[in-house]
Image (cartoon, rainbow, N blue to C red; front, side, top):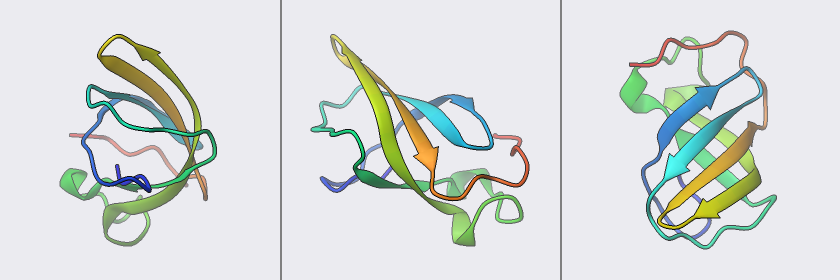
Amino acid sequence: MLPAAGCFSADILDISLGGVCLLITQNQELRIGQPVTLDFSAHRLPEVLQSRGLVEARLRWYVCSGPVTTMGVGFAVPLKELPELL
């Protein structure tokens, strides 16, 4: 995931055609509505995802609980089908 502040890794908790729920353990400054670019290239799914696995999105919500943050990210363009993630 690439927010305005930089790059960090996230675990996918759930994915739908319209977005994804992510879990991070890094302390990041987040704001609702901020644009993010999700990099799914490690999953090798260019036929399902947009160019080279990069997907434009926006942060919809987040919840911080100690060292863990859960966040909902909405895709700018919904996926046509659900990918099978590795």
